[in-house]
Image (cartoon, rainbow over all chains, first blue to last red; front, side, top):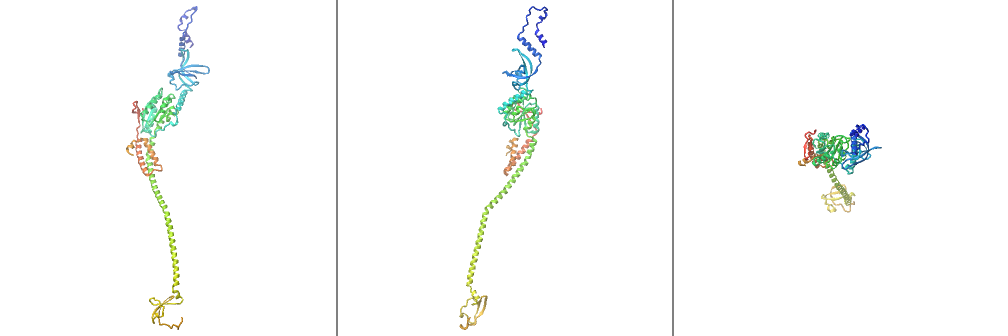
Length: 429
Length: 77
């Protein structure tokens, strides 16, 4: 390098070396500042291959034009650096001051100021993914502040969508996977693809626009937004604000499916449901047709059972009502029956008393009758004479001689014949 | 339920309705008249859902800039 430098510096001074005798007072060659700076700039640019430089970010300023000016430093030294807008636009975010980074770029000289500097084409922090992670966290914080990550915002997916919207690359594996899962699980559905570029600059806005067009078509019941696996940089569109906001404001439930199982993107966080892969998203949005058909086909049997139970319930209800009716009647009858019972008891008692009274009266009458009866007198030896017709014969003159009559004794009656009157003084009985 | 109403049901509405009919039928309180009605309605939904679910050809379309859709001939492309 030093040889080149010497050659370079003495270029155009051939006349000096041609002259053998030392010149008396040679005028020194005077370079203009511009010449020197241009020469040094050429030296730096032509002789130093682009390289990675590791260090810490000192100051970082982004101009209105999008150029970024910063210093890289370590314990002992600083290196002025610049990243022009075209490259800076690809940065997920600006690195923070003090952040350990590595920059890839070439060395040059800013002639106007004579500043030697690095023109960085890439800046990476904490390994390759640091800035992406930082941008991710920053966007996450902004979205969180707007409440867009709130769990309450998550809507349930329709259980049986008719039409499924898909926003992804028309040529990507993701779309093929989604279609094949849907064809297998839910062939009665309709898939509407709205294609978009899913990586590279502006992809986030393109995917967002495709999502909005699908919404405007008013066709889908649910939308899958996603792409297949790739590097963090490839997936970056799904970590950017335009798409995040579009998903958050989508009136139709959105399933986000980006990359592989391990990749979690901002889109995943904002969507109603995060699926680990596009295939999984397709599985999530539709039911399994075979199982569903089997379930539907079992329904008539269940309906029949329900109907039979309803019949059974009706029968039980009728029997129950009859029983209740019978119990009701029984309840109302009991007092009647009781009073009837008591009535008949009283009646019976009354009857008995009456019979008893009559019987007592009869007995009394009998006694009195007996007292009056002539039979009592007869039992003492008296007799009663009566004509056969029953007329009582009380006087002697009522008996004619030879008259037949009856004599009533205590224990019976005998027939008798009158002989004639007996001397009234002659006998004594 | 008339045929016209039956046609207007989406699969989702139909299956949701069927589920609620089954839930109602399997609850304890349906009287016979209602059960009969639900049974008939349920069977109609089953028939129609079965027809829809037996569909075998997935329709794959692309949304055009015009807002219309166009069938994608080869879904695997």
